[in-house]
Amino acid sequence: LLPVQVLPEIPEQGLNVYEYLTQRYCSKEANRKLEMAKFAAYSEDLTIDIEHMKRMPNSRLAHQAILALDNVFDQYALTQAIFHALFAHGKDIADSQVLKQIIEGMGLDGSKVLRSIQHKEIADKQAEITRYVHSLGKHPTPYYVVDGAIQDESFSTLELKKMLLQAS
Image (tube, rainbow, N blue to C red; front, side):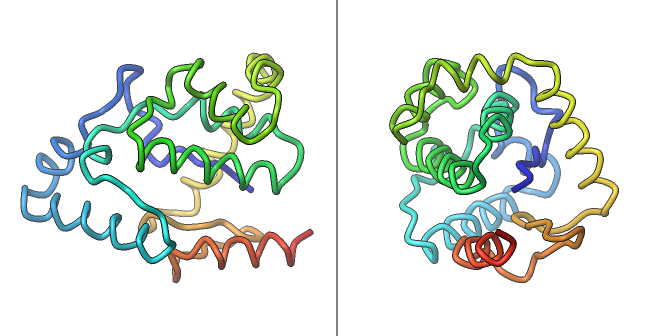
């Protein structure tokens, strides 16, 4: 599992996604993109609040927490828990205390994981993954990288789970 920051340039204080999309495309297209994301979430039985999607916190810390876990299924579970906290409840995943609560809600040691991400190897690994994925070219979000190839045909996390099971 490679946690990839789609927009690593998001400032520490976060980004108003709606404003960003509106400036980049237009308000009609911004609304359409948010609705597409909402539809993708509903198709996965994820409940989201579209208002929480209009502000995107910097996800560097969350990505590093995922990388700090050794088990691919723990990584997958933390990814799902972070998405739920962010999109269903509007939690600020850039806040280390919020992230610690999310990790501990999974039954893992939040303090240990947060200590692990302070190692330079985690930040270097995240930067390496980001460079690698960007070298594959631009693709619609979300997408998965499986065995060095972009998988963007499905938004389904069930498809991702199937790929993870096949790889393990």
